[in-house]
Length: 130
Image (cartoon, rainbow, N blue to C red):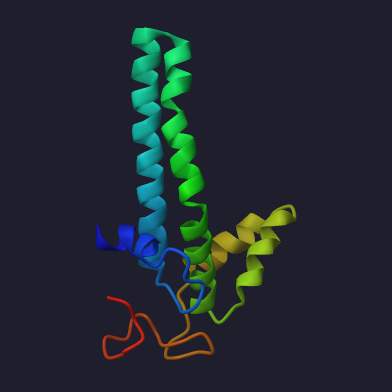
């Protein structure tokens, strides 16, 4: 649960490195939050009509806008863990670039310190946020 909220505590921190666990737990938290909002909107829509369902989707839109920056920041830090620049996120703009990013996000980071900071898996590092 701690890893789900860590990117929110490091809201706009684009420096350093993030583990796979931090990235994927944050993505899981976002997914579960969207499901809760969709179910609540569906229940309001079934009971009160479609107009009320669209009104209940407004908080979902606000949450989606609020998590854009932390989502980008944790993605950049995940790329930093593999000693890649955050500019690699732009590969998502070309066809099938998302597959390349998915592979990057699933592979393990470099062992030991790299040019972006200390290894987040190293328990003796002072730079790692706990």
